[in-house]
Image (cartoon, rainbow, N blue to C red; front, side, top):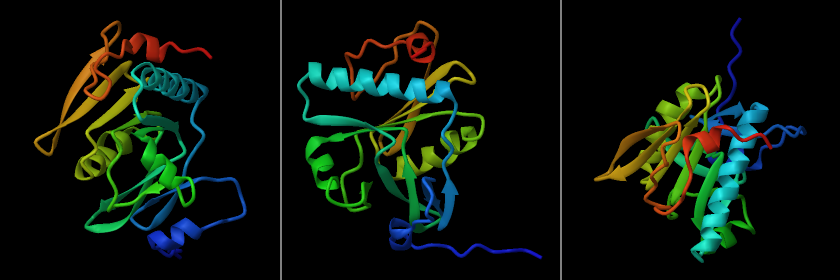
Length: 195
């Protein structure tokens, strides 16, 4: 006997509460529980977020960087019923201020984030490299980083003429970012975080 789970609309997803602390992404109308990830996943995510925040302050940009706090609504299979919670998102401060008094999900009619980062774990590698890449590309997010501790690399996808162009970085190579062009950060620094 097969049990089918009813699909949720985006509006139902925003109101959903199962009485637990579980966080869910909405993918093609289905709730997908988010795991906490490994300690390394958390350390890498936190380190990058701290580096982004420091660079934003140094350059006096009117931006903010948030770690696992903001959802990004995106199309999937021709329907608008997917919402991802990114590991890190960089957005303008005015956009963050607008999200403070409502569900923290960037809607389809709003400006896309400036940059999104996903840190790969064994259970998310296919989604991070394939599904999210397509979704973020369709949303015209200018830059998407995939930080992959499994292969010791960082891939930066830059939106060029509506398509993502990937560049891979390894070891002591400085990660090249169009959003943060003067950021001094190597793959080794990102992946060797211990705190």
